Structure formats: C-alpha cells, structure tokens
Image 1 (spheres, rainbow, N blue to C red):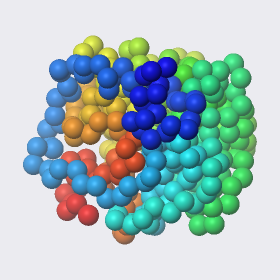
Image 2 (image 1 turned 90 degrees about the vertical axis):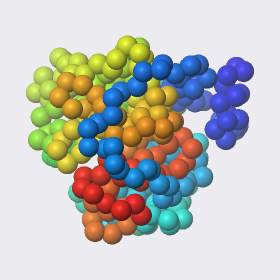
Image 3 (image 1 turned 60 degrees about the vertical axis):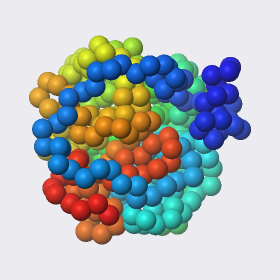
Image 4 (image 1 turned 120 degrees about the horizontal axis):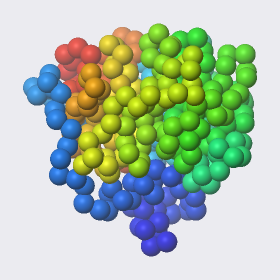
Length: 323
C-alpha cells in the first residue's frame, strides 16, 4: 500500500484506486536499481539532435497516434479522455469527457479513432476469464463516441491490420483479442504472457507483440496459425526490468519499442535489439507522423507517464530539423 500511495503521489493520480498492471511492474523498475547494461546504440543515430518537447497533456499519456492531416490524438489514463493536438507546440484539446479511454489508440482509414478501455488492474487481471472491455469509436472532429466492439479483455495495446482487423492486448493476462471488419470478436485469438505493445506487419501476415515482464521479448504471431506464437527476439537477461511497453513500426517494417525503466527506445534489427534513443524514462508509446503538416510524416514522437510528447530526431525516417 505504501508503494501504491507513493506512485499515486508521484504520478498525480491520488484519486484513483485501481492502477494498470504495468504501473505495479514499473514500480520495481523505477524504485529499484536499473541494470547497468543497456541495449547498444543503433548505428545511424550518433549525430542526431536530442529529443525536444513539442506538447504536453495534463495526464499520464497511455497511447498516441497521428492522422493523415498531421493531428495527434492521445489517450489519458487517469481522466479517461481522448485529447487532440493539432500541431507541435499546440495546446491539447479534450475531445471527449471521461469515456474510460485509458488504453491504446489507432486511426482507421476513414479517419475515425478506435480507443481501448479497461486498462486497469482489475480488468487486466480478470480479462482472460471475464472479457468485458470495449473498443470505442470516436469522431476526431466532433468527439462523438459509440461502441465499436465489446467482449474483450482489459485493453492495453491496440493495432490495426491493413484489412481493417483490430488486435488488442491484455497486459495482466495472456489474451490477444481480435475483432474482424464484420464485427466478430475473439478475446483469446492468441496467447502470450504479459502482452503489451502490439503492431501488425506491413503485409498483414503477422502480429508483433511485446512481452513486458517475466522474460521481456518480442513475439511474432502468424495470422494463419495464431495458436503458435514464435518468440522472435529476447531482451538481454540484464534487461529483465527494462519494462518494454508501446510498439510501432518504421517505414521498413522494423519494430520500435518504448521502455519504462531502461529509458530507451529499442529497434529490432535482425535478431537483436539496439537503442535509437536513451534517457527517456517512463515512456509509454512511440508513433510516426503523417502528412505534410503538423506532426508530419517521417518524424518519430514519444509519449510518457509524465504527459510530455517529444520529437525524437534519432528515430526519424529521414534527416529532419526538430519542430
């Protein structure tokens, strides 16, 4: 209980009783010594400019995504809101009230947002047995909310496949959920221990999932054979408390992974992990920009428990000048 109170105070959530499973895990990484070893630096990042803060949300930012107009959308853990930020340096606008939007967020081809609910300790731990969480559809302009799908485990990560299929993770359990474009819901489509960040390969044939705790690593799940997830890359044993979280893909289809305790952004290269950036503790998600304005194409952005959004030039798809 003392640790819970400390975390509530430190993270500004004194009114909340339930906490996401990753917070309790993060406590071990934040309050205990972090292993001395870190992933080696990726080869092409040495001369990049340092990260620069480009926005700040008044809450724990759980997930971020950018639409084709270069607008960023963020889910806020404690208030359950969806925020919109029109451009770097802009003030965040609360697009919704508290709709329980404390999980992942993705943007459909039609511009509508899909956000996850139930990303708290209770729903995470019971999600495999009692899948009652929802994916909500949110209009990016009006903030109108409707239920897109229900009957999923507590939703942490959300990923969208090229064909419109949606995949979700439940951090406190094993379940990888699946929602097909015609509305069929399978909360246990696949299983990986402590699944967190999630993404879909560019061709839609594989789902990539991060295992956060116990034995951190990156899995590949064949869409055609979901009962046989394959462990792709394991973190070094000294990174057992790195607490990898959100997952995105760069333009070459390589996974990038935010970490809480290690303070690094990892990139998968071949069969190993390297660090795109370091010194960014308590990161929750990374994403690339889109379009020719605002949070624009080719730029990498990081969100975190501190509510700060940073541009990370070292992860840019091409040389850019920080906003």
